[in-house]
Image (cartoon, rainbow, N blue to C red; front, side):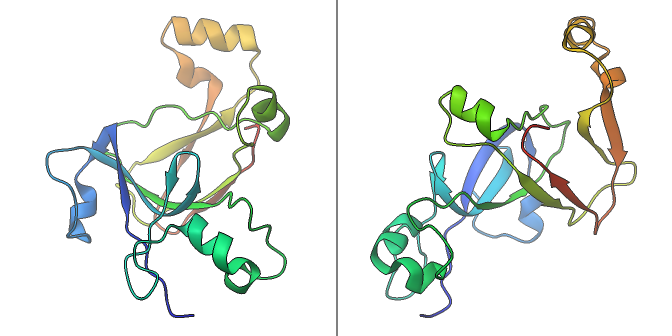
Amino acid sequence: MYPIKFKSIYKEKIWGGNRLASFRDNLPENIKIGESWDIACHEYAISEVENGPFKGMTLQNLMDEYGQKLMGAKVDTSWFPLSIKIITTDEKLSIQVHPSEAYAKEMGLSGGRTEAWYVIDADPGAYLYLGIKGCTKEQFKEALENDHYEDCINKVFIKAGDMFYVKSGL
């Protein structure tokens, strides 16, 4: 196999912007890009090969055709629960919920969302919210209704090079 390159899938977000333009030259115009999905194969997006003999095939097509030859012997090639994306923001992100595996299945979703985040770049004073800090469901609901939700969420200041493991259920 040769080095396979996938087309980026750009997702518009209300908190997005144009920061990817500093290192990408194939961006769609006049949209606020919040995410660049660079490798994905699930219900929200499937990557397409951009180069070589497999050009035009999706990652799912490749897994179906080449299975373990492509993915290795220890990977279930019927489902690829990995997405590699770059997130850029010009405004505050919406608060993300990462359901546990059990809750996701109960709600009809394909699975939980465990993620690893690597901070490539961050403005001075940048932060992210990571988990709830010791408040009940009722207290959190009240905080949301009265616009003081930040009292209930862990605020973590970040810098380039930081890494975060975000376990499903957080």
